[in-house]
Image (cartoon, rainbow, N blue to C red; front, top):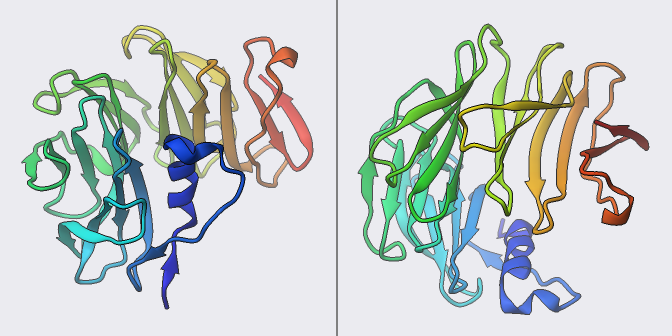
Length: 265
């Protein structure tokens, strides 16, 4: 069955020159693979990660706005969980299986090199900041971990950790326009989860709220507005969704909509 990638179009229309168009098109994509992540370069090249436990999972690339695809990085049965591209165009692929930790390309996916990374548990997300800084989240046996590298993945330091929270992990990372760092925590037990913020590169953290929520996504727009997506609320039950709130009605707060109710933290 041919898969058509809706998620590619979301990022494609947001970050390329045709973003002003008000319609959607379906893009062809290789058969029988499941898409896990994607990223787009400044030149419009699309890199898509697949993880289907098939013989040709890895990173696919398109140089013609998604019309044709080629396998840029063959990862066998251990496809990537997250892809990030820095300001210089270097591509970082976070692997999900044994033997694939962090892979980097500085020539638009032509060649790749492997980088080592501390192994606290399952890898979840990678984001870039500037030319050299990377953040990687992991799910350790006793909670969430956030690692930081300031030299392109050569050296790493631990900048955030939760303890004795076996079912908690850092689900998403977002960098604000002013450099502030936001992380969302998801969980499978009460008294965990939420959103944290750091204004000093990860040295200190402030809890913003949404404890007892399975926060799956956190995003910051160019104006610094913060949005969160919630899968489940342990207090009232039910799921959640992104809510866009007009900036003139905001007061530097985070707004969340869950089953038609507003939670303002």
